[in-house]
Length: 204
Image (cartoon, rainbow, N blue to C red; front, side, top):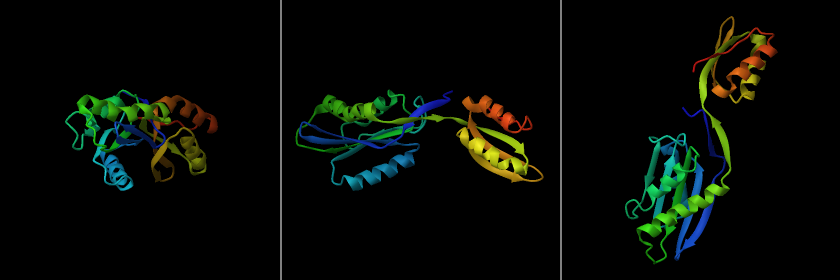
């Protein structure tokens, strides 16, 4: 299983003129089809009256073959969305969406020309796109005393963890998620801060 992968850290726009047609490629972070549809709505407002709004997305890790999608939006079948998706899948970047806006300039490109045109902006943008590493987080838990809570919360945050729930009784049970890569270091630091009193349980 993929424990970590790159995701976009910015929205990037590339504009190209290809045989009098204007192609505007937008690359952005996309973790769901709903997010893609929202971006598509906004782009149609930003670039009104275009002939085509083609898209592709990989909404999970780069190897995921289920959380993906594409659209030719009226271009010949397989000439836009599929090659766009193939370019994204070859980038080793996850949670990425691409929308290409085309204003037709009067010259037909043919299927081969369209494949190249719709892939061109993505290929160019991928060389400029800044990314960050996303770590897959796993459910974890620990028990601490009330005086220890602030330090424990700070430590979870330092290791890029996310607190899911806190149950307050005589002790505090903290349910959180943290990447597998940080498990050993987290427990080591936790033991140091609490003189060996606390240890987290990881459900992997």
